Length: 66
Length: 249
Image (cartoon, rainbow over all chains, first blue to last red; front, top):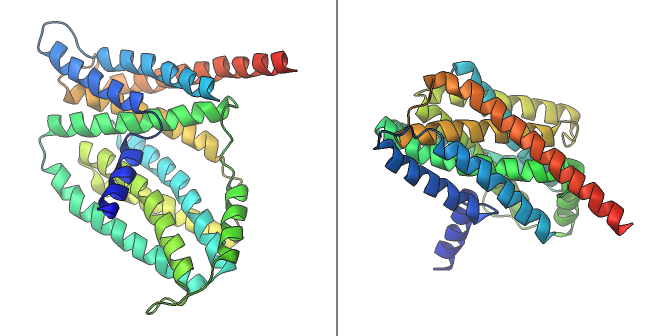
């Protein structure tokens, strides 16, 4: 059980990393892209927009914490 | 995407991870036992080869859109985390990665640990530290090789790029017998973060069903745009650092 928990913590750290908001934003952006791509509206801009939004937000939070 | 860009991205990422793993191995090798450290490296490389050999062919069997959605998303999360750290370091909000300091810390820890032998390993401590160091740094390399390689159906080329980087780092490391502190590691991490973010954005959106204007050529725009955004954020955060220092003083 302890090994499983350690592996889970390692996996979380490996995939999600220091800021969980980044992972949530990426998943949300991809989900929105899937939705928009099914309409007539171009969907390519959703992920870049999410990057443009989440990177400064994550940095500001990191800087304020220090 | 051209094979050259794939090669460059994987090669640079592997140089960075290779330098970090080499520092750990050198620290335990010089202070403890080279044979045990070498066995640790060998065991970790075998484990990594098994991971790549098992997951590589399995990934290429997935439908391309599903593969690009999942792998692009993971790559984007990975890239943004690298870029976030690199921007914080470049703007002075996080300590720069210092291989000399890490080497000293590892040596101090290695000197104080007690030696026990197990099986054919004379020094279990040196073996475990080397094994863990190479495996953990190598997992990031394996992830990058698999994601880039599978997406482009070029796992062979990605593996060659990774192997070339590791051979270069090991050869230089053992020639100088010191941590490769002169390698501009923080700059390389910045570049790799930009590349991972650009490729992750491109593949993730494409896997989600988006059509990029200009198709593959969009990558040639994405990477410089991500670079400009990252450098602008460094400049902004640097000015914040200086104004905070001025207020404090």
